[in-house]
Amino acid sequence: MAALKEIIYKVSLESVSGNMDNEVKGVFIDSRSVQPGGLFIAVTGSQTDGHQYIDKAIDNGAVAILSEHTPSVLRSNVTYITVNDSASALGQVASNFHGNPSKNLKLVAITGTNGKTTTATLLFQLFRNLGYRVGLISTVHNRINNKILPTNLTTPDAITINALLKAMIKDGCTHCFMEVSSHAIVQERVSGLYFTGAVFTNLSHDHLDYHGSFEAYIQAKKKLFDVLPKEAFALTNIDDKRGLIVLQNTKARKLTYGVKRLSDFKAKMITNTKRGLELEIGKSVVWFKLIGEFNAYNLIACYAVAVLMGETPEEVLRQLSDMKPAPGRFDQVATSSEVMAIVDYAHTPDALDKVLTAIKAFRTGQEQMITVVGCGGNRDKEKRPIMAGIACKYSDKVILTSDNPRDESPERILQDMQKGITAIHLKKVLSIVDRKEAIKIACTLSTNHDIILVAGKGHETYQEINGIRHDFDDKIVLTEMMELVKGGAED
Image 1 (cartoon, rainbow, N blue to C red):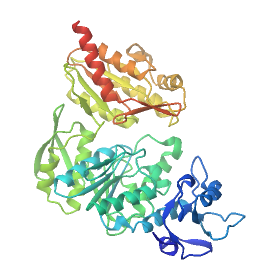
Image 2: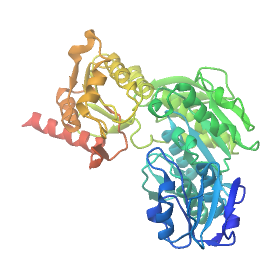
Image 3: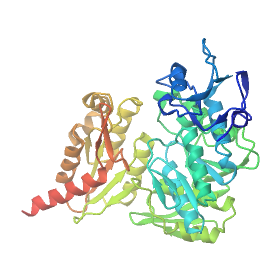
Image 4: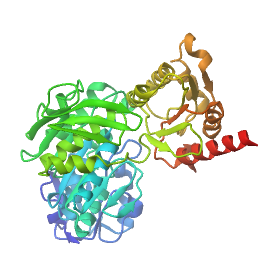
């Protein structure tokens, strides 16, 4: 609880009507959640406008309203505050209300199309192994050291973020690693946060349905770096052609990492097999359990962050060498057969290409590559044929299937994907709407030493169809289908 005038500190105000000494017991953006003594912030979202629910918020006990325009009818005993951008103000207000927790721990943001989850998760594991109490805000879940909290968004809203950071500090955490999506940056969910540093992983085809163009997409990522304080570090992947763009206007210390080009932190590929990677970093040659060139980038990014935060290079490499992938990221499913079964979150053309390229690097040519892949509904349609084409390029058999169709027709999504299949590849492709059946067919088509990749959903434990989430876990289904098919073959 704090005085209203204290929690709007640093917020640029346009007008105020009412008592600024009111005690505020909570900050809310959902009128249904407002409790007596609350401050309701009316935010205009992509689907709803919070200004429509101001009266409802007051009915539920709000003592103050922060909005972009003042209602025509004002109620007594309610303070009305207007600002130019309520979404931006929300971040600062939420931070103030919770005591500016981001200034009391080392908060590092990881943004980019691919690699965010793996990089953030590896950093979380690394710093815990180095002896720290650590927080994690990620696509898979949020963590306060040992405590695991479920999540629905890569980056939560500003109120949730600050509440999480405050809880981390209360638990004794000194560090937090946080995935930051482009949506979150544009929607000002990270406004008001103080970052110790930020990492840019890469940029490829995704979210153009939301941003409209690659230029808008990269500018969204760049905005995170533009507001970094001069004391922070700004670390970018120099091998990505847009990597240096994000550093153009930052006040932070500019640093680079990479595998192919000269950089401040460089990893040189020595060996790349299905058992792991051998990399030369600095003067050390180290074996890592992670697979594929894309993980070389994740590893060198983690190494760079740790060293920039004062950790000993040798100890960082020793700890990283024993790390395992994040859930649903090149996640090998243990089965009793000799088929190599992999689940991966690859849901963009670039991610799918990188996973299949990683597999190609250790293929002998004697085994079949079977890929099961779909595309999500109500999302960027342009990537659908591209992903089907990539799957065909690297695979002997491709099964197109549903991902999360959401409110779209699964059959229509598959039709969009099929446009990317050339005549020469038609015979290798099956389209099976039911994802479980598609995975079963992939297992049926496989023989010993073949490789099955089930791509697109990774760690997710649901499938969203017509607004309803049904239990569905690729790892569980793939394991069950492998055992069912193997059992059937032995009968």
